[in-house]
Amino acid sequence: MGVVSSAVLAKLGHVVIGLDVDEVKISQLNRGAVPFYEPDLTDLVQAGLKTQHLAYTTQYEAAIPKAEVILIAVGTPSAPNGTADLRYVFGAVAAAAEYMADKVIVAIKSTVPPGTNVKIRDIISKYTDKQVYVAALPEFLREGNAVADTLKPDRIVIGATEPAVIKRLLSLHEGLGGKRVVITPESAQMAKYTANAYLAQRITFINQIANICEKNGAKISQVIEAIGDDKRIGGHYWYPGLGYGGSCFPKDVKELSAYAKSIGEGQGLLPKIDELNEERIIKKMNEYNKLVEGFKGKKVAVLGLSFKPNTNDTRFAPALVVVPFLLRHGAFVTAYDPQVKDEAIRLYPGIALADDPYKASSEAQVLILLVEWPELINLDVHKLAEVMDSGAFFIDTRNQYTQVDMKNAGLKYVGIGNG
Ligand code: UGA
Image (cartoon, rainbow, N blue to C red; front, side):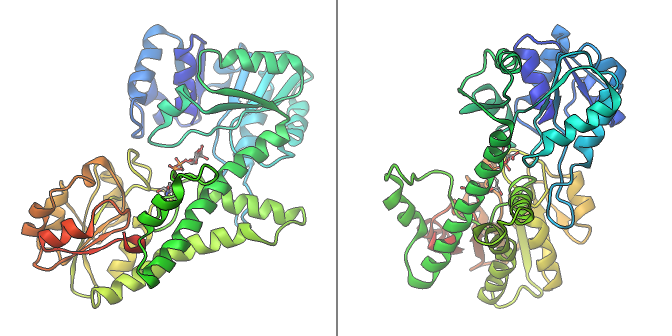
């Protein structure tokens, strides 16, 4: 989020200095190399460096004193009790405070619970007497689509109450698409959690419906088609699978749930969403284990190791549960992912890695498609059937292929919710 924001704001003509304590990442960024895979981001960073609107540093004294707006975009992992661990937010603010100019705006982009701004203000006041404003600027970009989402957001939410702060934050975003929503910091912070928890709930809900379809012969894709035109519901953003992953939904649902509990609203839907999502992959893998008459001794191709397409982020990726399950059940696993390479060697020492999906599937009795990477949703199924064992299973956890096509190719197709 920090790299994307810095590069987009530089493109808008602002002078941006990106600060991080990781020297390796900062020197990579200053050379125009983005240390993770995100489409279009490298070009944007390089353009910013070239125009000298963008630079990166590890030095607070280089980045903070001249800043009119300081965006805090550090991580907020979940603490063991599920609440947001705010130590990086507080640490960054404390380290920056002594260098802050008068009337600077500290805008929190990290996902934090309501009430955090007061704590931040208290921390800052320990280090400086200057007037510092604290605002909330929640971020709604998706990984893999981060540049497009930032350039053309549906909305930009500004959580601030002082007119001068609102004015400066509105002007900071001038040139970007989308509606502006100016609300209180608490509402902005709640909006962020609400958006992620709602989307996570939507995915969990459709996965429950898919489970029912698997029992009664209905097809989940047809169910979605039949209700998607109802404008109150819509057909978007609830394709079923093995559950939601990534660095945001699992964490944010847990955090909102723990935060709700801490203020006496802990019962109800939120903990259930998390519980259903957590148990889903193992449940499905147990079903698949029965279906293929045991993974033991079978060669299994796993396609897709990231948590979703167009990113090399593996946090809460389905493969993190699927691969160990397969190994525990005695399978020989060969995997392929378009972008997860070196990390796959580190994460999965017990498996073989292939350079393409067909090599990964060679002589396999089972193929499990985990991520709908563009290159993995247009596979030549006849070529696959040729390289795989005869009558092999194709388990499509993203419902990208059809029963008919697979049958014609001679593969046994298994979709989610009957495809
Ligand atoms: C999510 C939100 O979509 C962003 O708006 C938000 O800014 C971000 O979290 C964040 O808080 O930083 P992201 O985690 O990058 O973005 O990815 P999504 O595309 O939303 O997917 C999340 C998970 O849900 C993935 O595991 C994906 O496979 C799954 N998913 C998504 C489904 O299973 N079905 C769907 O229909 C959509």
